[in-house]
Length: 221
Image 1 (cartoon, helix red, strand yellow):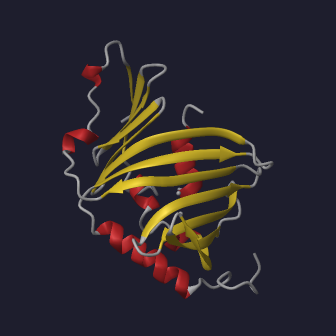
Image 2: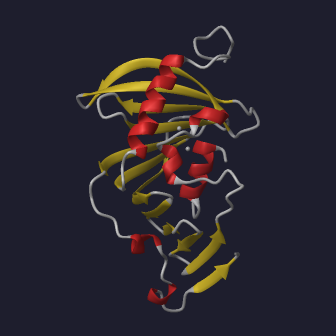
């Protein structure tokens, strides 16, 4: 599970938030689009975001295979993610992925032509090009009205066949996301706490190798 968080981003975004007779499949559900567009617009209005998250992995039988918790900081096109055993830094130009167990950092350059995977995309317009979507039922969780949106990847070769996005109706933010793999495994990414007003220094997004004695640097730029 060394690169678990990066792998889950790939699952969620496929580059992450069926028959034609079902509502919204074949043609996207306009009501679901309204909800997702509102979430995207709300997130883009934040100057900086600090959030705590949890990640739960289950197999087809419902047995928990792993749990992880972490923190993410986001500002414009920059981000920093930290969780057990791994830290990811993006300063808007380079991505540094630090593995604590091996004391190794891998540095890559962002390719603007690639459909790169970033935490920001979990909260913005990840749905528009790669998914069909429909609005399911509305539920109440911990006193909050939650809207469930079901997404189906248009590319059937993807390792997952369904993504459920749970949106806090009042806050217009994503509460959690569940990915269903074809293998039967389920990945649940939940936002436990989000601060959209805390000042965030740009230095937070820069990995400083000097702070890690004996570190091995793999520079792939």
